[in-house]
Amino acid sequence: MAMVHQPLCKFQTPYDHPVATFAAGSSIPVEFMAGGASHGGGHCQFSVSYDGGANFVVLHSEMNHCFGNGLQFNVPIPHNAPPSDRVVFSWSWVNAIGNREFYQNCADIAITGGDPNGAITGPRMVVANYGPDTPQIPEFFYSGDSKNKLYEDAPVITVRPSGSPSYQAPPQSLSTSANTISPDPSYQKGVNGNDNSDVGDEDHNEGQSQSKVKVARHRSKPAPPPSFMAIPNSEPATVCNGGDMKCADVGYWMQCAYGQWVRLQIPPGTTCKTVGNIVQFT
Image (cartoon, rainbow, N blue to C red; front, side, top):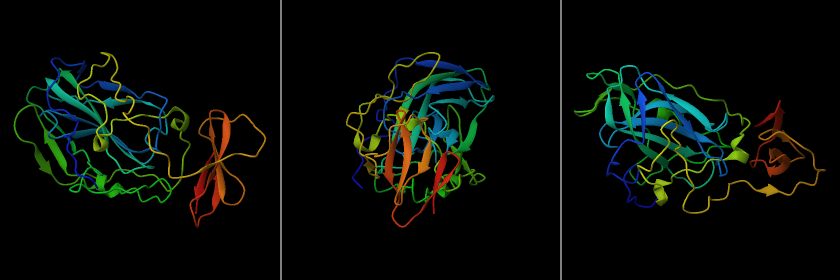
């Protein structure tokens, strides 16, 4: 693992004004831009910081199959969130397939209303695959070894506009998915993220819409190839629904991309079973 020379969010100089304003008790609408690689989904967290990005408390997590149910999210803001015009909103991602990286994109926002004496309490954002001092999460699209326990055991942190964060006992376990590959519509829609471990081209405070925070942009380099191999499909061309999956002949399975079936090799030493419009490897 290479040494990391960038801070979280890449930049630490605040934007000259918030790029969006949200009321405590409302939700932050997040939309990911289509057209890139979803890297098999993975773990996503949406977090906020009141101290310029030093400590992030998680508002919402998508475990195992991030982007599997679409590219839009509504991230809830607690009703008692303290107001501030110096809040850093973060999306972070550990991909399931591909180079082991840590993706993050940030925006400076304002929160209004709420409780001036309040605080936000929740799990601390997990940072992994980001240098030698962070835990490593290997590829888990096939193996199912998603290291969910790192997220389940994350310390509970309380943040507020001033003062040092406080910690509590680990939170209750997050729900996890079974070792089943679910339909992934983003296989053909995709998401491009800010890759901090390789120094992408995202700006910590780049302007966003006042009504929607778009936290994904194009990467500064081509996305790495997936760890599976796509095999030319010899079956007659048939129209299919994006993200659908099925087992093929021995040693292969198929996923629908752009209305056509693509044949893929199954993980070594496993067999494929079709369950509805998804597949399982056993």
